[in-house]
Length: 155
Image (cartoon, rainbow, N blue to C red; front, side, top):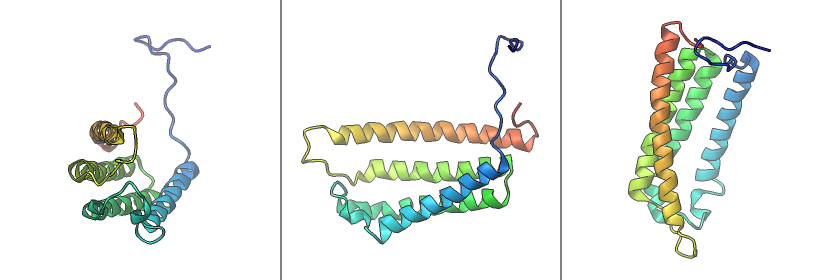
């Protein structure tokens, strides 16, 4: 049985996953983003989804940029598996993701008219929650980046 740490914290220290596990995750992230790019732009294409309107054309470019950023970020982490690189990659993907969310809010390329449920309201609530989560994530990754650069990660 472990004794409490000073200050009453009994939580075990958080350990990073092993290098092989992290690299597998980066590789899977690259494949998933590539598959989403293909599915959204080639086959079957975003236009087959009945709830997306023609206004989707206004946001598809930034959505594609987000997916490409994710691929590049995962590739960079695959090549250089360091905490500062992971924090920097996460900052890039969160930043572009936030831009996507804001554009989705502004354009709102969704049509849920054939439903008795207010899906438009649900979609707006999800967008706001995602924007808030992205903002919090950006702050957390800035802290993680500075901690790793100062040699204080995991402390």
